[in-house]
Image (cartoon, rainbow, N blue to C red; front, top):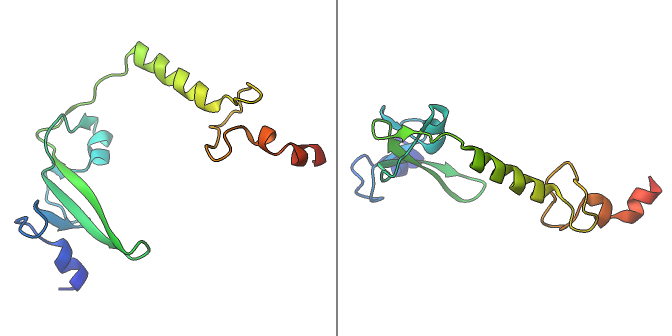
Length: 127
């Protein structure tokens, strides 16, 4: 057994507090949030049942994904008209430049705080 596999395999939860499995080797009946969402489900308030873990050599640590029981998952709540309208307003606010008050057509970078045209006007004139 490789050392990476050994640190990620703890089905009893003795080392990590909850059952831990290597990446892609979780038992049937458990799923991550994304996997639940793909099936049209959500965790529904249930506690984390287990986790999958793998080493990440680039970041010098491990990646962890929490697992939930598929049997205890609930269906995703439907999108209401009010929630849809609120989401539209939020996205419009993210696309609107505070300097020129125009819809940039993309989300304004937080590093600039304004659209690219307003942030770099000299390059726009040269082009």
